[in-house]
Length: 125
Image (tube, rainbow, N blue to C red; front, top):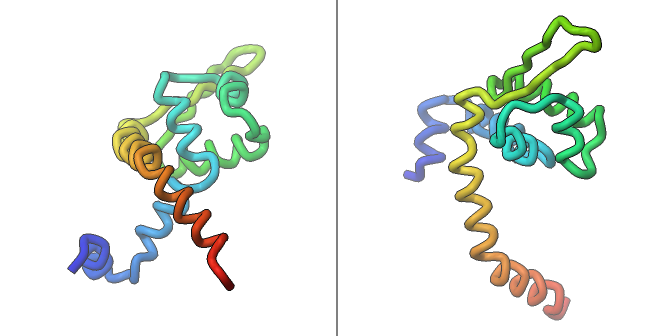
């Protein structure tokens, strides 16, 4: 029995819990935000500047979801103008090693993946 099957049997939810967590972690922006916050606490505008292509709305939504899931903390300071900073929680920091392992795997196997894609595209239909 695989680790996944074992976990699903223990949970008894058919894998819904695992899928929900992976949906959050594997969305388009989460790992970029987590990797950026691994450098330390950042204000919203600094975070937005460091992640090319993300809209303010998508950054806001993703940060809100990460905060809800306990991966990011949000600290608001009562100043004028208001200042808000985001940081990884211990749970968020624990995501860095597996994310780096996955990135390393992708780098190690990209040539094989690209060759396989080309062969698939070029095969007779």
